[in-house]
Image (cartoon, rainbow, N blue to C red):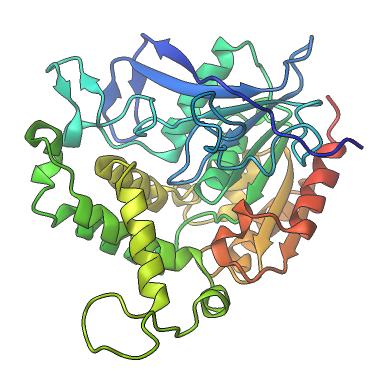
Length: 375
């Protein structure tokens, strides 16, 4: 076995679609672009393609680095590459920036052809199902009739699950990691608090802040801080920060005193420096709306009856945002339909963020599963 390597320098690609896309919200995108990256080579019969779906703050930049930014590795670079669990010597891997995103695909910051101005708050609501429909068009453009696997963590896992329902004949394997068949009321509540932080920022200007030359940085920073708390476990925060005081003693102020406060503010500032607030609003609403069982009276087994893919479902022991119980709901519904499904609950103290990290048991599991996929 070769030593795991990076895919090296990568170059984003762009696909323009002139045909309108009808959205589940009732809106329409008259035309749009998707930015994507690919790693590895598509084989002769085009049977080795794997689509990686990103989570809320992710993008098409899954692996490798750019020539002018050698330290800016893809968000799943530890998983994708030669000798890595998703081995690019075997698979042709695709990462796509979702519609409504802020990393190149058509989104709120893009120009609305009807007005000649940025879409801003006028960008239509998009759902997980809309993202999957747009990804299917890209697959058509690339000549991929059927994916060897669709893979995603968190919101990306919802997309993998939706692929298996919208296009069952086009998915051989669905790998659903740290995800859920729908959000709990508590999860929706966290998303709403984050959205209100943005919506109440004076610089938001009803979502048309681009025209004012400002960014609702304070709201976006607070939204990220709220979200980040839910991505970590209590154990992980305790082990990393505890109750450590930056000054060694209480100074009785509202400035940063505890190390965890410093960490959250740093994460919020960093996120607000590169992410778009309107995209954050759209993506959290897409999370809230996802519920394939809704049209089946809440019956998840009935909703998943359309799926024909083999499944790997993975959860993490300390993930309370998308708890193992939520993954088991998917497993039980698939088993009810006599589908082939493998399930693993990985012991990890890192909470929801575990799906992004180097965890030996987790990576060994993925390696074993991808090794058994025939292409």
